[in-house]
Image (cartoon, rainbow, N blue to C red; front, top):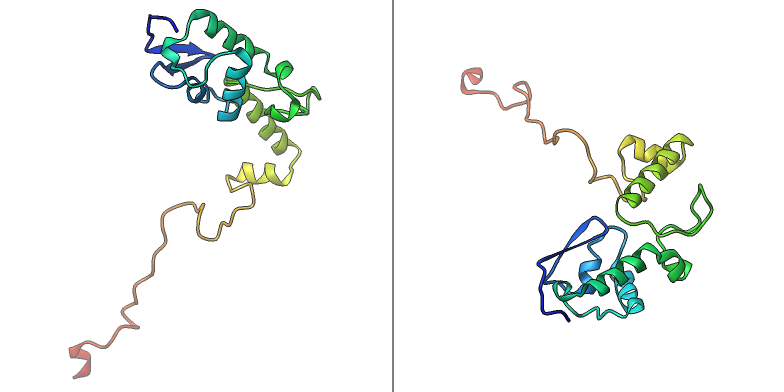
Length: 159
C-alpha cells in the first residue's frame, strides 16, 4: 500500500470513494456487480478487501486494463451481453455503453412490435408482474359520496 491517500479515485467515468473496499467500490461502476468486481480484483492481483484510497498507480492501471478486457479475461457466462443481436459476439458493456445498448434493445423491441416492446411503449410493466393494484396512472380514485337523492330525508321533508 502507498502512504499517500486519495479521497476519490476515477475509474471508467465513475468516482469511487477512497474509504470503501476495492471490491464494493468497483461494483458502483455501471455494469460491474459484486461478483464481477471480486473476480476482476483477484485476476489483477489486487486485494479486494483493501481500501481504494490506498491503491498505487500500478494497481489502478492493472484494474483499468482488466476492465477494458473483461470479454477476453473471463468466461462467457460471466458477461452481461452474450450473443449480441447485432454482432453475434459475447461482450461485457460498462458505463454509458451499457445504457446505450439497453436503449437500442428496447427500441428494437418496439420496432418489431414484440410483446415486451408494446409494454415498453405503453409504459406498463414488462416482466409479468401483477398490475391489478400497482403501476396505475393518473390521480387516485376514491369512493364516491352518496347523492342528495339517495340520502336520508331531512326534517323539513318529514313534515
